[in-house]
Length: 482
Image (cartoon, rainbow, N blue to C red):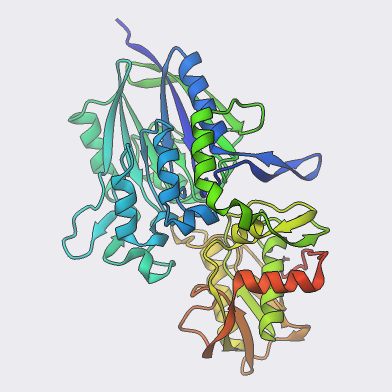
């Protein structure tokens, strides 16, 4: 007799603590279109609707980058998120930016969740023991599902040291086969679901090396997979960011094999129902900050977003302001992917915190032309490395005051064809004054005379906007692929 089951998997990933509906960018009508999306009340409402309407089991999973990214989350070190997340009925999560508050605070957060944090690849340095559960088994209407977690592996490699104090992170590729075998042979699961924050290219390579995963919920790279990818027998999806999308997989399973599936990248729009309880919890989380964050601090005539890999209008605003605040020749920030768009019209304080929620101090450094070239080549390798496991960055480092003509497909250290600083060809021996906002902006091993500029990023942007609004921020061809 055949054992037939149905399962609906719902993926939340890279929501970055966007509690309320916000602007989102969509590629439509041959260009960029902006409209409101997201909001945890809608996410909860859709989940409740699924559970009521579907005569099948619903498995809701969170792939991380959930506790960090907006002011209410950062101001409370993630704690504002707890009641809201606990109301969703999630089964498990894994993590990345959650470590921004330090490992001890994240342990405190996870101890208050009503579902587990999973990671096969985070170890205590002193004991070499796993910090979190590697997997769980869920029984859903006669179906045994094994859920394995892989956290982002770059936390102790490219992030500030306090993110990973006392911990070491591996890729998880060596550990994964053993857990698959254990789930199949000892736990006798029908299905294995991997929630991974490695990033889409990294997950595709991992799954080309390791068989036995039925479904991989990818995150970190903010891909919007309108159509699932396949790697061998594994179905792979990733569902955007900011909670603007949910990934839905409807599976038909027969004797432990997926015989059919349907996928939908669900836009979290105003067409979805809102959950009243979660809406109230969101309001309670945001209310202490709403008046302050709603202050208008400027105006823009152009849309500001962070959806392009080589350069972004959102970061160009930040970099403009850093140059003006410091009198530097160059400015650098990180290739962050998160940050809800700002549409033409008023800019609020909340928008500025969405750009850079940590509000770090602006600093300056004198960097040689030779170091500048090496730093940019290293960043391009971390972004475009042909071996996916070596892709350790976000988007290309956000830069201002330079123009680089690059060959993306060129080998490591040879991508920059020509580099100009303020219109003049790079002088390897000359030192250039550069402004930056984080340790990754200009790594510590580059430059001399690091100095605090006496201003933080948010104040620098406020001052710039007060002086120049309405601003018109454009893409300048800082990095041009040739």
